[in-house]
Image 1 (cartoon, helix red, strand yellow):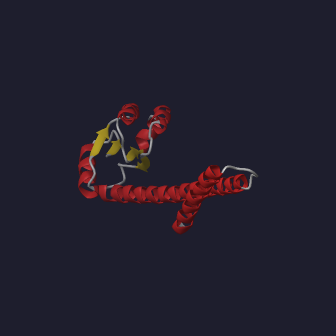
Image 2 (cartoon, one colour):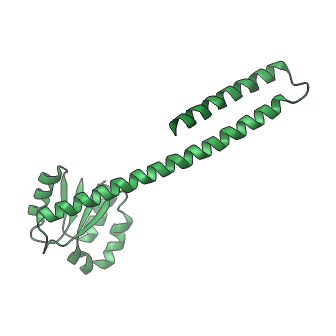
Image 3 (cartoon, helix red, strand yellow):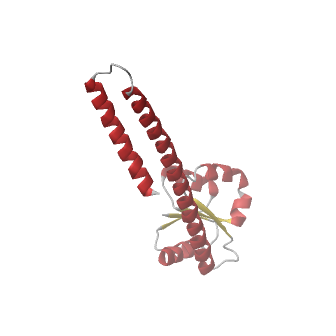
Length: 162
């Protein structure tokens, strides 16, 4: 869902046009304070902000930006932009956001894989050293060997993902 924040008299027309071209429902809000409240109560993929209104209500903008969550802010000027241009700006912002999220996801996956790999290496070293303990019961050696086997399986899966 998209939130369009503008006091322009073209807001309803613009909202309907965006719904048709983007294929996502659009809610229209006339002021920044109300928009901040709407953001606290609903989830939006994008928040389109009309520049002149943002400048006029700059003090309330901080509250709005703090409540964006995962919504992408898009700044436009409805006084000089037609619906086609706003749609282009919206699509570009959504694509940039999608690409940056994918980069962040890949980085997080890589970091997690690295941390798991380090932990598995530690488990393998500790269990191999423990199995060398003199006079360790055969039952304990068997259980430690099982832990080594499981850790090696995890390591193999991690390496196959790369």
